[in-house]
Length: 372
Image (cartoon, rainbow, N blue to C red; front, top):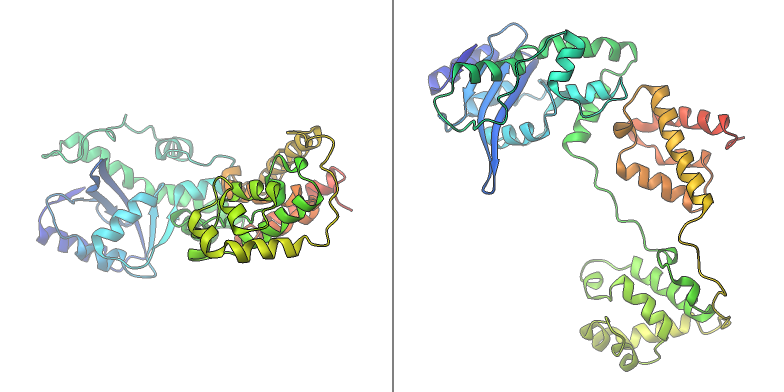
C-alpha cells in the first residue's frame, strides 16, 4: 500500500490507475453537527497498489477525476451511497457512477440485505478481518500503521470479493442488474403522495348521504389542487368538518374551526356554491347505524397472505426481501389489494427491473387459489 499526502504523489497514483475500467474504492469520513468530512480515500485496481489518499492533507483531489470520472469506469464499493456522494463533491463530478455495490450484489442472490463487508469477506473469502478501527477519529494525524492497514484492508479484498459475487450472478443472468439496483440505492425513487380518498376518514360512517357526497366532492377537489392553491386550501382533516356542517355561505364556512380565513374570504363563496351544486340532487339518507371496524379478520388474512407472498417470491428469485419489496412498493401492493383488486392483478405494481417478480407472484397466487 502507498500513503498519498502530496499533490505529486496523487498525480502519480492517478496516472497508475488511469485507464482501468474497474476500480475498487472506499472512504473514511467523520460526521458531526457541522457536516461530514472526507478524511481518506482508499482506491486500487486489480493489478495496482492500494493507494490511501489523505483527503485532509490534500485540499484538491481532482486529479482522481480522470480515474473515477470516466463514464465507462465501474466503481466497486460496499454500501457506497454516502461514499459516492462525498467523492462526487470532492471531485466535482456531475453524473452518478456506474456502481457495483457488493451489498446489493449479495442481496440479489441471497435472502440477506444490509450485511457488513466483514461478513461478506468471512462468508465468501474465508477471511476474518481485524477488529475495526472504524469508529476512531479519522481526522487525527498522523495516522498509525494500524489505521493505514485497516483502511487498506477495506479495498484490498474487493477484487476477490467481486469475482465471488459475480459468478452466481452471471449464472442467474443478473450481473448487469447490479448496476441498475445500485443506482436505485444511490437515488431511491421518490414515493408519490397517494391521492386522498374518503376511505381515509375513519368516522365516515357518521355522515349522512348529502354529507358523504359533499366529502366526496371535496376529496376530488383537494386532489386536483397544485402549488399555491394547495397551500391555501384547508387541511384534509378539516374537510370532514366542512362535510359535517354543509355551510351555505362563506361566512358559515369561515366559522368552521381550521378553515383558513384568507381562503374563506377569497375563495369561500365559489367553494361553497360548487359544493352545494354537487350535492343538490343527492338524497339525504341517514348516517350508518354502526361504525366501520378499526380492524377485521379479513384485513389480517390479507396482510398474512402478503407476507407469505413476499417470502415465496423472494425465495423463488433468490433476492433479499428488502430489495425486492422496499417499503414504498409494499405500501403500493397493500393499497392496490385494499382497493378491491385481486392478488393476481396486483402484479402490475411490479415495474422496472422488478417485472421479474411477476411470474413468481402469479405462481404464488395460483398455489393458494388466488388466481385462475
